[in-house]
Image (cartoon, rainbow, N blue to C red; front, side, top):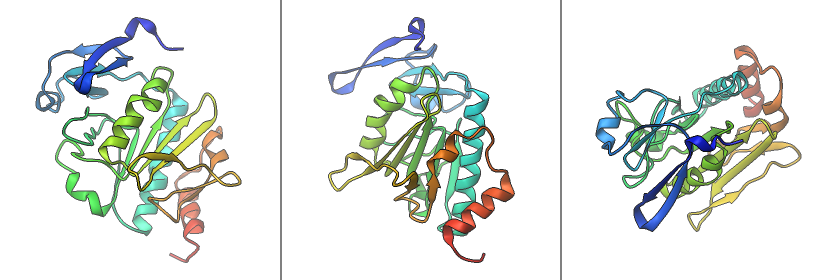
Length: 223
């Protein structure tokens, strides 16, 4: 359930209105000032308003840690690139908010977006793990922001509902649903990554050596 005490209504460019959840840390703040870090690590910048991100559960943290290792090893064995987790900021476009995705994968073709204190452009792939107050943002505002900004692939993982939503950009520049087939999700940004969706909801996730073996099996080659 969303904590309505923390809902904020915000008018933004193009005559749109955002309803934000989370504690307001500061208002009328420039993006450059926000990047100094003085408003705290786990925050996001939305058109001059600095919003505190909700605390995450232990389960959330464990899933994020597993996916971080999975992406890191996949990139190490294949394309190269980097994966970042919050509180690294991504600003997908100059006219969009500065968000802190749970995970963002930046491949070599977008490495020039990586700056000292932010990813100043769209990551290739973004993952958001839904927390109690983040669901409307993850499925709403962030969905449209990442789509508009040029993120190629977007995962929304809802632990409470055990619901995975996967989207990829089509030729029209819009996100389109890209569901798993027979319980296995195949990424388009990382085309050899085939992930059994049921693994996302396990009580315990694979340890690092097991993750390495998973990646080797995905690639189907001796490394």
